[in-house]
Length: 638
Image 1 (cartoon, helix red, strand yellow):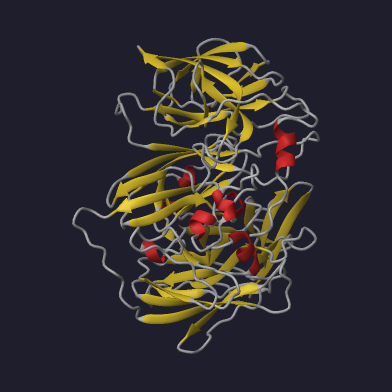
Image 2: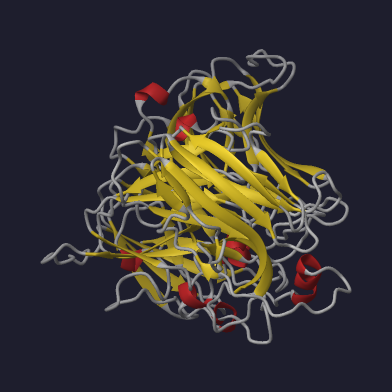
């Protein structure tokens, strides 16, 4: 891992202000597992008294250093991270008394706009509470769903509001007449570095990320048995984007509320099977998952800087920052990660996959002539002693497999540092999933691939689609360096007849704002892609950028091209075909303007049938402070 940046001075400015006198001892915040609703529910009325207070939060466990934050508590109880759970059946009237015990900060509480209606007068979505004062609110919750309540500190409209990543909590409205104790679990994602500087710019600090008040590996473990139906409600209480990825399985998106974008956003995702779902700031998601294989599995954010060890919070470094990568999952990861232990059914024995019909070697190498600060690494693919395809420096070749055909892949490490390979989106046994020190089971944990060592992976891909393979050690560095590649599984011939074009979006190797921020297929300036009129193409898009999660991919015609469908946008049309390797139903395979938000760890397949000759281009646009980044792929239709 790169050397940690000084963090304590930043935190001191962030939470106490420059030159502030030392604070008195603060109470300790308690992690909230979101199993016990707050308040008293009687005769369809919930009465709850909340307080905004200053507290000490320990993301890595009570025995390790913490940091001061603002948080909510029920009156007379310890503050909790996240805030107290508000959970009621539809039709309940909620009576909230909120007291602000902060000495200097006004808080502005934002209520979910679609939860119901106010019983009394006032603003429907926010409430301002000055220091030392209290406000009462009455509303009726009528719309079942997963919501978020949150608060900012600082005067409304003032120069330095903080988005208060820990002044937030889950707000659940259950269907009337539902089970008295729902079996779902609620996961609230929070971020301690969630603030603006005096010039209203985002602070650049290493964030401290948490799920239900703890940072991995101190987050709660979930437990299930093969065949169980697990229902999760995921609440993004931060102003960051979180692409939530499940290892080894698909999950179903049952509800997706893009709170900052309006109630119509996200409808296309509902009911869809995914392995990664992009969650914008302040959004919520309900998901269902049925584990089909036992083992240890991860559910985590795929924004790589959200799962690396945070900087020390005190003189004693957190456990995650002190270890190496031998047990990478426990010592090299931190933040927004949940571990799920799936037991086999009683009496069930897990069969060991046999040797594959195909045998491949995937060799990790480092290219000479590049500095340690920005190395070039890549995997080299070998089969029967030959190298069928090489991608050049800083990128790895596409692996092509066949649905239903067993494969053995020997991962060989010729680097001077450890690595491992995760088969992103592939349904396989946990031991081969690539999570060193956690995957597999208590009897047999997945090892890291040490330098000059190897590890054999065995699996049979059960479906055709677009997937990813990538290193699962020191991910921000190794991904930029090039230890990432496309994994394409095809149906046995002659079923799959469309011509493929793979477009892999990754962060540039140098990662410098002075150079290109992104690469397509390992190149900052990609070569022209040639298509032919009347041929049907499957355009496979893969997103694995390290930073900048808001990548908008579009297929456009040049202004003078007759292929343009609308002169204002110049977008052509394509037909959505698959998401994360899972085919879309026919109802959703309709022509639409060629634009797609591409999150980290997501794959999208589109069918494109060029009808006329002309010049096209694929564009990726990302807005970042003070500039707009773009990478283009020129396309010529002949």
